[in-house]
Figure 1 (cartoon, rainbow, N blue to C red):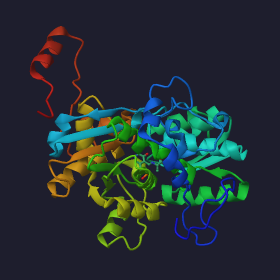
Figure 2 (figure 1 turned 90 degrees about the horizontal axis):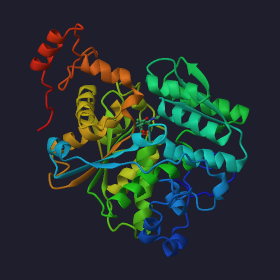
Figure 3 (figure 1 turned 180 degrees about the horizontal axis):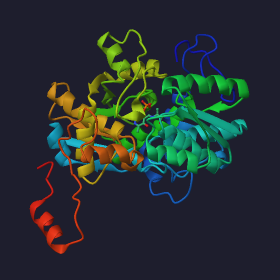
Length: 427
Ligand code: F0G
C-alpha cells in the first residue's frame, strides 16, 4: 500500500519485502469499470445457489474475481439486516439512523465475511493449517470456516477476559485452542512468529484477503439503501481491519461509479483502548501503542496492526475518530438490546459514538447515519447479565432490567406483576 511494489497472488506474504508496509489486494479498476454495474449486482439478489447467494460472493468481481467457484468456502455469510431505527435515531439526535447487524452472520460476527475470503485463498494456495490470534470473534469464525473447508484451525487467545460465547465456539468447532498468558497484541506477534516457523497461514486481518471479504459489508449496505449513499458510516475500531476495509470498499465503489459521493467514516474506540484516537488528536502522524483495557473485550487492542490503512480510510473519507467510555458503551448496548435487536458490547460503540458526535456538532441532525453492529448479543452473555443485575465494576446502569426473584406463589407473583411495569427506555 505504500511503495506500490507488486507480488503475485499465490505468494504467501503478509508485509512488503521492500518497505515493510501492509499489502493490498489490487484490482484492475479500469477493466472492472467496463464490467460492473449496479444492475449486475441487483440481478443476483435472491440467488438460490452459491456463490451469489452469499452476501460476500455476490460481489465476487470486487472481492476475488479469478477464484474458481469450487474453491469457495461459504456458509453462506452476509445478507444481514439493515434495521431502520427511528427511536434510536431520536436518542442519537439525527433524522435517519440505520443499524447494519453483522452479528447476524453464521458465527455471529462480521469476521465471517473476511474468513470466507481468507480460508478460500488458503485452499487455493493448497495450505492445510490456518491460524489467528483473537479477542474471540476471529477465532470463532476461523474455527468454523476451517472445519467447513477441511483445514486445521489454530487459535491463540488471552487466558482471561475472552467472552464465553466466543470461546465455546472455537472449542466446539474443533480448532486447536492455545490459551496464552498474554494480551491480544502479544498474541498476534506470537502467532506470526510461530506461523512463520511452522509454515502455517495467518488469517488475522493483516491478511489482505480477509479485508477484501469485509468490504462486502459496505457494498451490501449500499445495495440495501438502493445505492443512495448515507452521510456517515459509524463503526467500532480495534485492530482497525474493518474500518480499513470500509475505506477501500468506498474508494473502489466511487472509482467504479457505483456511488456518486463518499460518506464520511467515523471510527469509535473505547476510552481504555484508544491508540487511534490519541494519534488522531496528534494529526495522525504516528501510532503509539498502549496497554488496552475495556469491558468491550472484542476491541481490547493497544497496537492495531492496520493503523496505516485506517489512516488512509480516514483521509479518503474525511473521517473522524471518537472515544466512548465503558459506561456509554453499556448504556448504548442496553438501548439497542431493548429494541429487540441486541448486540455485544463492542458493537454499541457505533450508537454511543454517533450520539457523541451529534452532541459535539460533528454529525448534523439532518444527516443520514448507518451504524455497524459487529457482533451478536449472545457472544458475551456475562456482560449483559451483569449490566442488568448491576454488578459491573465502575458502571451504573441507566437502563437496567433487573430480575424479579419470586416464591412459587400466585399472590407473590401477582404482586410483582402489579408493581413492576417494565420501563420504556425510549419514547
Ligand atoms: N467488534 C467486534 C465484535 C469485534 O470482534 C472486533 C474485532 C471489532 C469490533 C473491531 O474490529 O479489529 O477490525 O477494528 N475483533 C477481533 C477478533 C480483533 O479477534 O475477533 P477491527
